[in-house]
Each structure stands twice: as C-alpha cells, then as structure tokens.
Image (cartoon, rainbow, N blue to C red):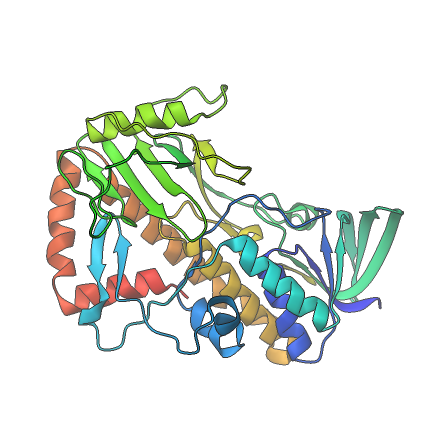
Length: 388
C-alpha cells in the first residue's frame, strides 16, 4: 500500500479530512489536479456547526486572532434579518475568512504535519478489489498508480472520483433565476454615514442581507480587504453567451432598485468576482460510498444555497468520515450524512421561494414572519442556518 487513504482534492474539505486523519495516526496522500492553489474568489467564510469544530482544533484562533468563540447575534434567511440574540442556546457561529485564506492555513498545517500533497496530479481512473483501490494518476512526470485501502473524492461538483466509481448525481436545475455578482466601487454618498446602509427607493438598506423588491432581489456587502460585493437575482432570461460585465450588473441593479446606481469596476489586479449564473444546481449523489471509494463535500452534494451552507456541510462530512476511516465503521456514513445534505437542499429551496416574485410569495412571507416571531420558529430557523 502506498497509503491507507488517498484523498483527491486539496480544497478545504480534502485538507481538513487529511488533517483529521493525521490527528488520528493515519498518513494520507492528497492528490490535487491544480498545480497551484486557486486565487479565484469563492466562499467568504464558514457558517454553522463546522466553526466550533475548527475552534476546537485551534484553527479559529489562527484564522481570526481571537481566542473566544461567540455565537452570531444575527444572520439572514430568505431575505429576513434573523435576530439570534433571543435564543438562550444559539447554534449559529461564523468564521468570516475568504476560502483561499482558509485553504492556505489548512495546507500549511497539513504540510507541517507531513502530509504528502501532490499538486498538478490528476486522477484518470480507478479500480478496486476486496483488498483496496488502485488509482491511476497523471502527474507532471508522467502516469503512475497509487494503491490504497480507501479512496475519498473531495474533488468538487465535477468529481472525477465520483464518475469513475459509477456513482450517480441526480438532482434539479433551476433556470428561472439569473444571478449576477461583482466586486464594485459604490458611488460617493451611496451609503449612510452610520451603519453603511444603501440609499435607494424603499431603503436605506442594510448590508449583508438579501433585499426583495417588486422587481427582484439584491444584496451588498464588504468583506475585509475587498471592494463591495453586489449581487442581484432576477426572474427573467439572460443571454449567457456574452461575457459578464460590471455594466450588465449596473443595469440589473437599476431594474431591481428602480433607480440607477453608478457602480464602477474596482482598480487593481484583484482577483475580483465577476460572474453570472443562469442555472442553479441542487444535487445529491445517489450513494456516498461504492465499496472502498467514498465522497465528501461538493463531490457528494451541490447546493444552490444562500448564506454559505455548502462549505459547512462539506467540512462536517470530512470530520465524520475521518472518524469512520479511523475505526468508527464506514457502513453508516451514507445514512449519517445524506439527511443533512437533503435538509440543506430543502432549506435552500425554502429561501429561494421566500425571495421569489409575486403576491403568492407575499403571503408566504407573512406566514414565515409569524413563524419567526415564535421561539420555536426562531429555533428551527437557527438550526437550519447552523446545519450539521
């Protein structure tokens, strides 16, 4: 055996899995197709029950400089501001760090622990028998194979491991909503001096929330070291064959707000967000395990969610799976983790419905507001945000 466990994918999920295995006395090999860590903007942080886990491993302090972990006083759900201070035992925690920073810290820890991380190595196939898995890899120096007892695919939504293992990836595609996001510079005077609220018809609007208007949805937020990130959602078709521009986002924001806002591209090299999504995928693998091959993170589930549930879900997959690979019993992995993914998909669908257009959504939002006003309703929403 080259390793007891080979992990494919050096994103946050694969790296956390590797660290958890080393912590338990197993030295994995991590194989990553990209030659260098990506600097593309992705998640802006971790939200949910993965945060206390990272705190218990000393990662929260390393990433934030803070010793003490505090529950989040507020968050958002379906365009509602959720006041979590009303809960005696608040399960929602936030780690506000960019994904690339999280990956860098996890990778540094893994390397210092002696983990063999092979970047620029692509999995091209696999075969398995009763004793282990043989993994075909194409590396910078040519093709080779690895032999391991278990192979874990943490290689994202287009997982080569999942496909090679013959695991299906059923789900749904929502092409009714067009999402546009970009880092931009807001015009002078656009924000109030106290609270940084956006001046616009129907406002001023608070940052870090999704706001529903008669014409769509928008949000704006500023994360450390970056310009404002503005996002719009519109229920109208868009031509996805042309490149996305800040001008396109400006036009969309104007339609949603009912007023033109002279946003402009940021200066400097970035990297900056500039993207359009015309299809939102929600998928869960039809099984998380095929013999000695297992899946975690986006390889197992893709969530078109609001509020960052996917990273929390994937990192908790990694912690659960590591315990099982270290002797906790693999046969229960699918049954343990699948319900959480299905729950996150259901909550994402509920949030999308609460943000949708039309009078029927107005009525749904009124019912949700009444539910949120009760302690039981607030608790259920907090549990949905915290995930598992």
